[in-house]
Length: 215
Image 1 (cartoon, one colour):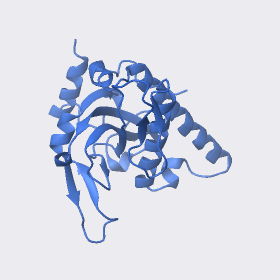
Image 2 (cartoon, helix red, strand yellow):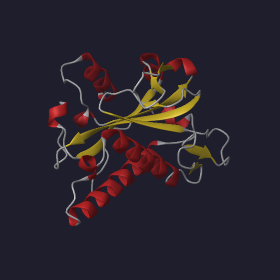
Image 3 (cartoon, one colour):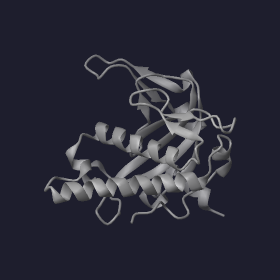
Image 4 (cartoon, helix red, strand yellow):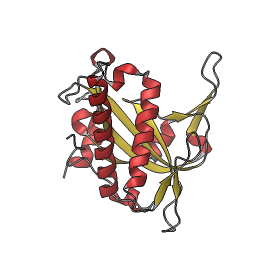
């Protein structure tokens, strides 16, 4: 069974501020991997390509995000519950603890910035994933994308409307609100799988993540 990175959990205070913890996150990532593997196993029996090769990437991101959000709710010890499909926010507080807010979850591929249809102020969990080889190895580059999704980063924090860039390009799928650089800087990293970070090992960005683990 696939597991999240053993030592990938950092900044516990950022999660504690919204009433969550690393154990909830660990179990949610593990459940997400397990369900994705079960789906792929079923597709293989049916003679169909893996999920990552069956649906478009935008739909894949949405599906993984929905699975991950549901897994967070499942392991939240009744602090959160899943909202209905296409409803904001993705996770609703049950009110058992006053410090646990409603949460919106956004998923993005590789180093893309998470986006949605509307720029809304609130508490966010953002997650980014990569497509690895069947053995779990990451080969950087779009042309080297594999078939197994792995979450390589999770962040959380409070975003304002000003932390989104609004696009309404003609021919696009409608308005999109992309978390901008200032918003990404504000969101605190709470999980990072360094071995699967889609970044040059010599680059400044990779080194900034590596500092989380340099004790």
